[in-house]
Amino acid sequence: MRQIIEERFKRGDLAAAFDLCLDQLDKAPDDLWLRHRAVLCLVKSGALERARGFYKRFQLDRADFDEDCLALGARLEKASAFEAGAGEFSAKARTAAERYEGVFDATGGHYPGINAASMYMLAGDQPRAQDLARRVLNESLGGPAQGPEDAYYRGASQAEAHLLLGDARAMRLALGAARDCDPDNTIAHATSLQQLRLIGRALNQPDSIFAGMEPGRPLHFAGHIFALGSGPGEVSDTVQTRLAQHIDAALDKIAAGPAFGALAAGADILIAEAVLRRSGSLNIVLPVPVAVFIESSVRPFGEAWVKRCEVCLNEASQIIEVTSDRRIISGETLNFSSGVAMGLARMRAEVLATAPHQVLVSDPDAAAVRSYGTVHDGTQWRQAGLAQTVIPLRRPQAPAWPVAQSAADAAMPGFRPVMRAMLFMDISASSRVPEDRVPAFVEQVLRRLVEEVEGLEDAPVYSDSWGDGLFLAFDRAAAAARAATRLRATFAAIDLAAAGLPDSLDIRIGGHYGPVHEGEDPLQKRPTLFGAQVAIAARIEPCAVPGSICVSEAFAAVLAMDQGGEFRCEYIGRTEIDAALPKLPLFALRGVATDSVMAQMYRCSAGRAQAAELIRVDEFKPALDAP
Image (cartoon, rainbow, N blue to C red):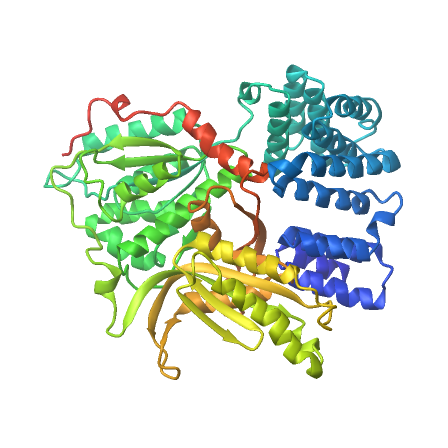
């Protein structure tokens, strides 16, 4: 059974893994591994409050000399500190430091030791932090490493200790050696870099001490569609060659890493080819299935583009089709797809502890008011405060765009295609409520949640209920995220014992963003929402661990471009939400204080991007005039 639980955990099916742990604990209540794994499922899913409750219930803090169990409690305190407002941070950071120090004293491990030192430094206690850093260097890093990953973490702890002691040069040498031990573990590298940056700021060290440590910068790309030739709106082979050279130069200058964008004829494909020439990770995000996209946005501009598009598709790291539509319905659909691509680039940058960048091939004379396409994408990116490179391509006559209608114009009579952020929520274990306490459940739980919904500043544009569940839809992902976090907090504040209700009750929330059809419900005779995206939203909710908010990749990506750091989305894994659907990447959503460390880390990528040297349009001379 442990193997099954571990497999579920690794593939992101945390709700199932958690339930299996509890089932097995009924048979073996003293099994320490099961207790630890159950709490780890809650931590990974973002249900931190529930995790703290189970950590205490399972008495994992009494697991003498078990470093994993003891450190898990300290990790929960650290997470609490990083999410707290600035006024609470110092005290919470000290609490986390003390917990880590207690584990270090008990086990002597370098992991709790260096975390204790770092949290003391962030709490403002430099002498204690440096004393612990010396102890880690002198006492905890001996003995052979247990494989490449262990060797990396030993080296990273050594680097962190050197930085805490003010030796930036030794930090760089130790971290470089550590990376050589496990060169492909980019997530571990990024986690270390994030922690080192926090320490560097606490020590008033310049950010330049980390120069060269960042991985390639995640990239969003877009550009104008064009055919090749000498006719109106077409681009000559000479101009195409110069354009490809400028794209190569831009990617080199910004040290481009994984790239996210579409694959229409023209500039999209040129940029994608440049990414692949660098053996980069190419992530294709399309508004419709591949075959539909090729017929609408590639083939009309020449068969040569189709062949080049297919080569890029075959070499892409992943292909994301954000809808199952059989045609590109509208400009709104294109904006949704590009919004997901931009959000994924920003999310990847956050994970890699670097700043995202956007590369556009765009006509500098194009009207900035266009509601979709390359110019629109560039405006959205700049409004988020992110760095951008624009390579000019002046076209005497633009080719016909594959979409020339709005969503309203494309709608069937009686239906209106709209973009919605959807939340499904229910109360887990509500079937255990005794019949005589059902009225109390309705009044003390459901009514409290509904009152919270009614008090939202950004009210849902659609709402419905059934039994113990609610369905809410919003115009924007940020509004839905605020509603979800407030509802979770409202439920957490309910005194279940006072209401005579089981303490096993908890809220779970699923979220998704996408295009839906708004039309009249034939039974209820009122407007409601229809479509595959509604079904996906409904099926995500059961995947949420009780006490958590679980959202789709589309929701998380759109939210990344629609917020200023008040939320965090942590990747859970690819999860089966329905046997008839492919596995979906899911994320744990949590709200954090806007002046918290987590929020500052989120905004840090934009800050570094704004401070970075931008590549100006006028660097690309002579101007690329077509044909």
